[in-house]
Length: 129
Image (cartoon, rainbow, N blue to C red; front, side, top):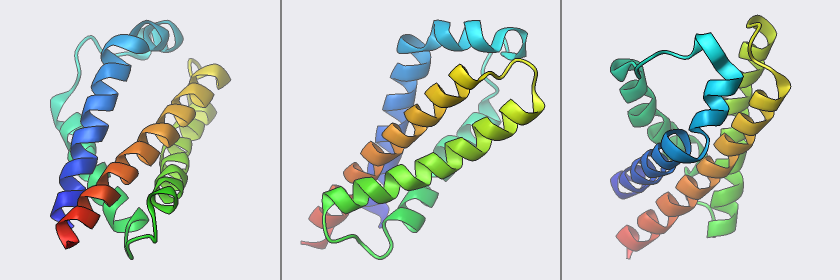
């Protein structure tokens, strides 16, 4: 299970660093506006980035799926629920959290979670051999 956690941690970290740091940085700034912090708050970020992969492995990969496509589907479902909860709650309670932002972020979380779960699955399969 530790190999799976490490793989999920690495994939989520790298994907989100590229997504938030380069690809969608201006999109989030434009959509969130003044709600966006000038600097990332390190403790909440660390809690998410170390905690989410643990949840992904525990909830999407236990018991270990029969194949990588099932792992991806389970990861995608967990991402859809987790990111959907976050974004739809923000959309319901914040003025500057529109549908475009929510849909893009939910899609991203679903995709990234599917990839992280697939990587974790492969790591766990290799460790079991």
